[in-house]
Image (tube, rainbow, N blue to C red; front, side):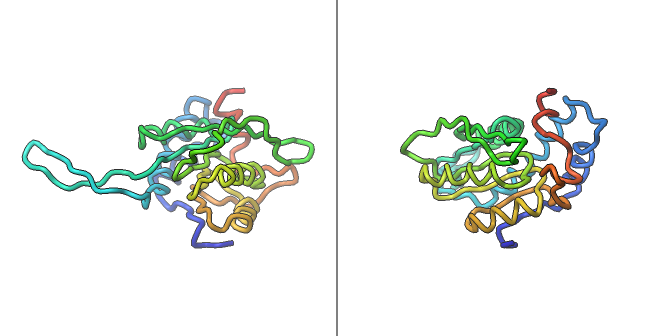
Length: 209
């Protein structure tokens, strides 16, 4: 595991909202709220060192030199659960592009099935943030990252609320240049390839299905 590229948030607010998120008694509306808060904290950390450029800013009293983000930034939620993490990204970066990748896990094999992709064939973004609340086996994330590399994105980040050691090991092995940002690294995957202790199925709980 490449520790330098794995960032586990250590924050009192993260721990607070994770506890609420995990609880089986948390209703769907509250679950979505906690996902949004944790996604905001993740996004703030992941975007800490994005490239900026100098700009001129006129205040009511003077003109000063400021900084603004440089280049095109894309949020890439993995459907469907990743949709729950998009709004915090658009709040922080209103100009962000949102591209969708459709992937689901075959329950018989635990392997990802790639069923939707609307990325253009050219003109890749400068930076892409892959969004998925759960980094379990790493299969879907691996397909998403490779798809973005094939598109030509030079800098890719992986953002997940909860990650497993197995998923992190897979991504750091296959893509050592891709930083991983997660709120917490859980204990393991169970026999059904779900994260333990985890929080169940994030997509089902976000969308009340």
